[in-house]
Image (cartoon, rainbow, N blue to C red; front, top):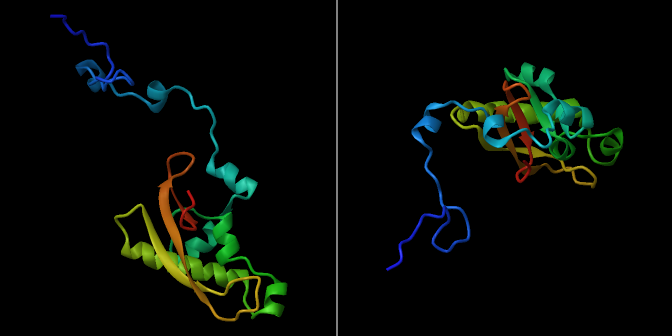
Length: 163
């Protein structure tokens, strides 16, 4: 009868079998760089704000009750905040400051109800841009708190499905 040797692959021989860490490895604290190596590419929150992919609304958010920096994704801004004079002439009087306040007010109230979650959805009514409608429509946004460029807590408000 032939003896089997552990080759480090699963029984099908397709991929490495899971290896348990040694006692020495468990005892050592390792950084992400030690585990995975240097990052291939890094895109910071500051770069996203500078590039326009995120819109920093921290000053207004502070007035609404947020204690950490807040930004909206460009898509969330375009859907729920952006408003021009042309929109006012075509549809109804609104302004970006008021629409932004609506988003932040609904977000801070939802955050107060979801204190133990890092991500949650909230709803608000807004008049959709670009048509003739005067009637507000219900929409959902996602509020996510996570680490900023230096590990500090930051909040990003986005459309569902954005990351």
